[in-house]
Image 1 (tube, rainbow, N blue to C red):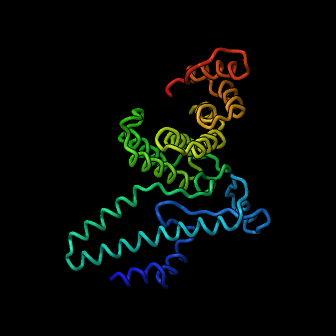
Image 2 (cartoon, rainbow, N blue to C red):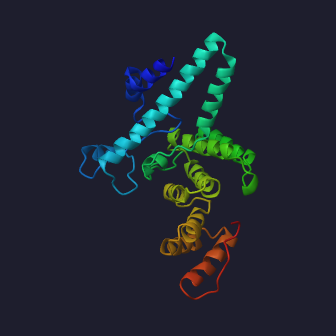
Amino acid sequence: MIRHIQSLLSGPCLFLLVVTTAGCNVDGRAVSAKFSQDDPRLASRRASGRGVDMSIVEGQEVDLVEAVAQHRGAYHEALMRLKRFYESRGYMTKVKWAETELRDLGLVKQFRYMMDAEVAAESLRPTETIAEADQLLEQGLDLMRRGGHGVPGLFRRDRMVEAAETFRTLIEQYPTSDKIDDAAFYCGEIHKEYLPGEETIAVKWYERCWTWNPETPHPARFQAAVVHDYRLHDRDKALELYRAAVQRESQHAGNTRFASSRISELTGEGRVLAAPPGQ
């Protein structure tokens, strides 16, 4: 049996899995790659409307990231085959072991490592109402509520990850929906508040929110400013976004009052403020 699993992970079965999953959904998340500036594949990505959002990376990184994604898929598939093997022979204790390993595997945060795979292209625009997208938005919001949104000390990480994936599904399946900016905002909220160390991803989602819909009702500019200010310590970018929030998000009175005071502080004209509202 061990030799069978080893052959699965290293032999033709893995090759077939690699062929069918490269660049696809091998672990619940789409895999995407970025290429060097002179690589002709980069031009085709731009022509297809898929954004290139981070600095150009070397080809070796692309290969390594794709290898990680492929082996994730192979590992999951091997566990599934092992579970079915034990089920067919009635080895229920080992079935439970395999189920536990599969469950724990699903809890591991799996990064895509390429920012344009983590965050959808900035060229999208919300142009129509789509009932299915509306339903996904409500589903994601319900998952956030059940995950303890607004109660950071009591939240459930698995529910928040599931909510983020639901919002991503909305964006990926219905890129012209008038709810994509809402989904982007809530992705930003989840990465900011509930997934430590993912502030860079959070601000990218906030940026997508106002890029896709400059008149979005969400305080995306303000939230991005807070992350740049207090977590990434990029005060120049924070100042730029606080000013944008004052100009474009005046309906959020508490935020704009804080932003105005923080602008004065950062430019040496105001008193020190402890933290923005709700932080």
